[in-house]
Length: 130
Image 1 (cartoon, one colour):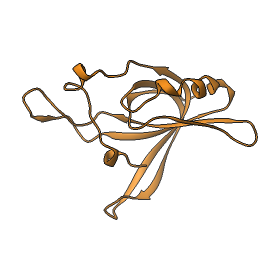
Image 2 (image 1 turned 120 degrees about the vertical axis):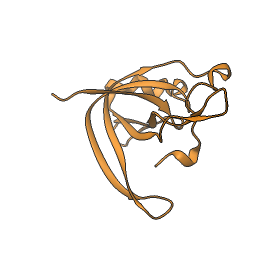
Image 3 (image 1 turned 90 degrees about the vertical axis):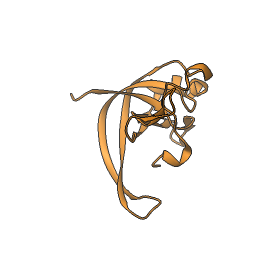
């Protein structure tokens, strides 16, 4: 079975909902890499690659009660078994692709503090592709 790991920062708070059939769906977007400004005011890094993460069913039921840990800027590690590219048209009218993964496991990381924000990645809502 294919399995890979993705680590990054959430671009927004996670959302969990229970579907009519009882399945639990939790979704969030994470960025791998990205631009930031160092202590000298210089821009470093590259444009972030965004991934939409989908967590299904009872094995992720703990995410529904732990979405308070999955807040914008939080660091997570996601093990996934499925990845696909979904085409869309971006805000400027250019074709682009959204990368979507189906999680197998999610590990919570520490939430960045104000003291570490000058050395970490920083993203605005406009940077998120979906």
